[in-house]
Image (cartoon, rainbow, N blue to C red; front, side, top):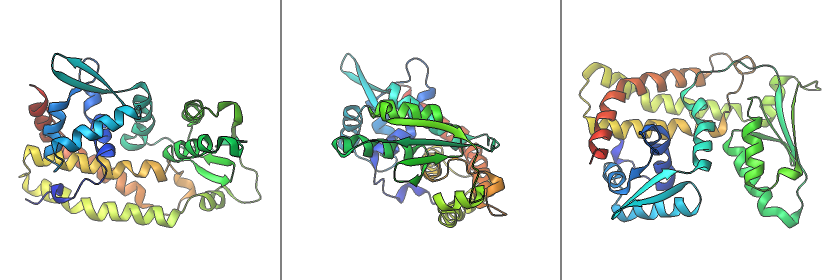
Length: 277
């Protein structure tokens, strides 16, 4: 059976973070993983040992992973910052879908050129949370992510320069028109359709044949989560009542959960095999 392992992993850091968010954080204890086990897992995806070591070193410097040693072995776990990011993204990846309460979350800031780097970091953090720009210094989200936005402001040392609101929109546009102004709905829909086109045949094949190996299931699961995780950056849970009929994001979410469940047991077996020693 063909698998996705022929796809090159262009961003090892992001892929390793996907592994930690989906599987490693559920390990007992402090949720740390021996680097040798990580190298075994990533070898299935075509990453060399030096590439993995370089990636975890970079992620440690960036504050996403922390290292500890036991004898001559190095173990890596997500930092508090990394755990917060995982906790922020997980509901948008794994669900459940939360009904919109009719209010918009809004963040405005006044950050001068003297602190341009901090301002850019804040923008990057807000984008990662699925927020969109309403104006150059105002960002909005339909999701209740004010706590995460507050943490982003603290992390970027811009907290004293921001203001946070939860409010209803009173025009002159409609809520739907406001959403379409801030998010490219057609482009997001197209991306969802591409995800469905990629993974629906693969799910049906596994359902029909059930011939995927445990290793292939792990590879498939990580690519599935990696690809679906990207939607968290462009779709913060856009309210269904403000979206076009037959929104492909609904079908994509159902497909993700069904395929994830279909390969979870096999992939977990291979993960355990690589991490027990």
